[in-house]
Image (tube, rainbow over all chains, first blue to last red):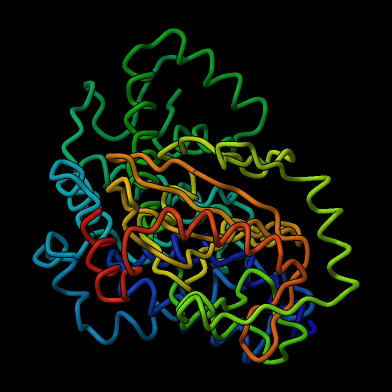
Length: 174
Length: 253
């Protein structure tokens, strides 16, 4: 891909990539670090000719997150334990209730296995189809479906959603 | 038969085959518990979107934009063009006026702008108009949070971007900001004032031609800009805020 086209393609992806980075890292500063590392790598190495840039960039983003950002353990462990999530600077934009809601969701997301978090974020936040998510995350569609379902169940369990008498699997008569 | 959470989750995402979709749709009509379970699972989507879309409200990191900016000025996309001139004292602003480009001013005025006797202007192509801004609009956000000379990209596809350029206290005691809105190669120069918590656009004017040379904005329409400057100068009560004062203000809003 020519440099200009690549650059323009990345520009168009930026807001979505950034949201995804935020959903993965749970902290704005980390999200912007991850976004920067992603853009830098895609600009430097480009995308394979036969791969959609959008899927490729999200894959790069997720891989960097797993390989590098999380390995730093600078803030990750604290975020996951919920110790730092509440302290994230939000420039006074969020009201207290919003903060609490965000921190609870963020903590629940942080407790998910990495691959589940990556899959659910792509589908729920960015509207990827399972096939697109499978391509972006380099996993079979069935695996994506399973990860998303497990992530959803874990999330609503952590967030205290009151069940309707259905614990895990709903069983009905055919 | 069993309907697993995995199937319900795929149902939420529109990923089921038609036969399964019909079967689950029927089951949901007959089983309230199942329907509630779908709502529970679906709520995760709303929570995630609500939690993480919030980052859209903050400007894109400059370091990232810099990486994506062409090093060749001629190739530089308009949505990241710097407008450093507003940091200069007004008297020091340099306006160029090429003859050919000045003809475009007539076209631009004829197509896009009128100035009413009260000094309020509207642009007729629906890109931007004088009046109160919706608080969910990108422009509202940019005026509340984006520092002068930083560019807030609304839509990279059509180069839509907002670049605040000046912040000042008006003679009416309101904080006002001058800014540029670019879209599809059109540039609007405008000024808006903050009334309590709502931004009201006071003046909008189409800038018919522009180019950037050595980081200094120059325009074909010196006469037009003088008219705009006159309006803004009449509105400013004192010196524009400096970067630190503006930063403190934007953090407060």
